[in-house]
Image (cartoon, rainbow over all chains, first blue to last red; front, top):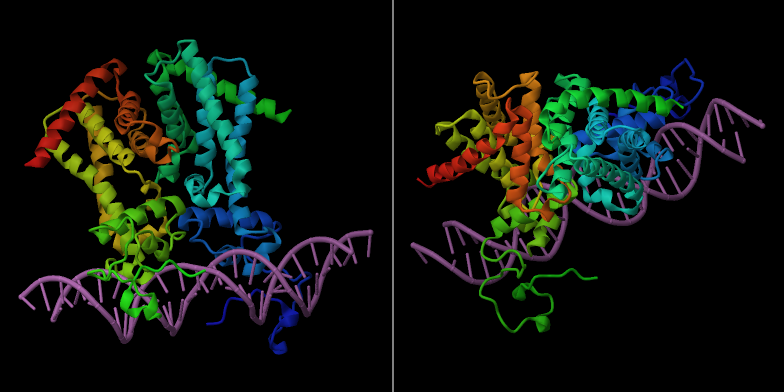
Amino acid sequence: MTPDKPERSVRSTSPAARNTTRLGRPRASGAAKDENPRQAILVAAAELFSRTGYAGTSTRAIAEQVGLRQPSMFHYFRTKEDLLAELLENLITPTTELLANLEVLDAAPAAKLYALAFGDVLNMASSDTNMTTLQFLNNARTERFDRFWALRTQLFDGYAQFISQGLKSAAFACRDEAIARSVVFGIADSVALWEDADSFEPQEISVEVADAVLLFLLADKGALEAVRTEALALIRAARKEEDE
Amino acid sequence: MTPDKPERSVRSTSPAARNTTRLGRPRASGAAKDENPRQAILVAAAELFSRTGYAGTSTRAIAEQVGLRQPSMFHYFRTKEDLLAELLENLITPTTELLANLEVLDAAPAAKLYALAFGDVLNMASSDTNMTTLQFLNNARTERFDRFWALRTQLFDGYAQFISQGLKSAAFACRDEAIARSVVFGIADSVALWEDADSFEPQEISVEVADAVLLFLLADKGALEAVRTEALALIRAARKEEDE
DNA sequence: ATTATCTATAGATCTATAGATAATGC
DNA sequence: ATTATCTATAGATCTATAGATAATGC
């Protein structure tokens, strides 16, 4: 079985087999690649990593999914590890930006926490790959991942800060703050474990999960609706902040 | 660098190098193995899989962790895939057994749901490895995993059943039952995403997470304490059921 | 000169099988 | 005869580099 070669007319072994329509550039005709091979590689890698795992995905599989030969991938990424690191950073960045915008807004901690959880979940649920669980691999512990882990810590600290403020103002109540932090962070990320996330609207999922976070913490559970309304307004405000 | 050979005196290349103290059996002196190599292999594999991923863990790494040479592992497991399948089944089985016991007990659905979530979390939090996220790999989609997936479906259906009963009796309230099911299942499994689970007592984690599940669903949030008390009694009853 | 691709390949794995060896239990 | 281990190895990968080739842009 001969491999499915992208055409590269000049080097073709049989000159008779040459394609008469000479292409301007020796570019493979991969479906997903189009104008930006680098981006296409990221997309393909995200999908393959999340389905088959990091070590279980070969650079060959990634390259060929975008219509390139295996070594050509290394023109865009120095190593396979670089690919994973960049994907993890891309996944978390929108949420850390949301956090930064929320921090400077003037609002109740409960609303800020709701907004953060909502945005976090929305970001994950809107992606059609599921990279979240890959961050726990030992593969993601080398120096190349320092930047990612710094972002991740920032995010955790953001959750912790809003929780702490809510406890101080007595809007929240819990038995043990340290555990509550992990419960909240865990619930927010739990969409990563859904097998049927595509069956629902990302917006709907985000509301439900953010509701769950707040119901866990609110001293007065009846305040949920008001908090949610305030939070969704905050999200819009944070988006505006971003545009400037 | 010569490999760290377990002694196997007779086949030793240099007879002069022979150990004078002949061992009764040609058994390697691996630390973890002791009396039950099969069990030791399972433990080692669970730890390595959860740290480095399935494809990222070699059969050599597993075998040598228990003091065996790589091919000796295949005396106990026909394939590497068999190892993963058995680990996943072992992880989920105690929880499906709890479910079966809860189903026949006479109690409020809220208490049964609490008990199920509590036991589920306790089971995961008590294990010192984290296999939960591995089930989502494509590796775990072959026929060998049918039994595991049947158990997993059983468990999801158990959660669904208790939720449905609670809604019928108006103990629970939610906007959309299908989403609520996934939220609940996700929260229960979310301990798999904790990076600092060892910092807390498994019992404490389980209470907090089961609380979060019930706070999400209860129509009257004030009923939580009573539900928790009833649930912990149920767990004891279910354990008794099991002993018979 | 730079960018994007390819073929070829070095060198390092990795899983599983074959077949030898030794101890144990009948 | 069965069980548990080993060494050796086949055959299939896998990542990354080297070096050729062609188009583009100065």
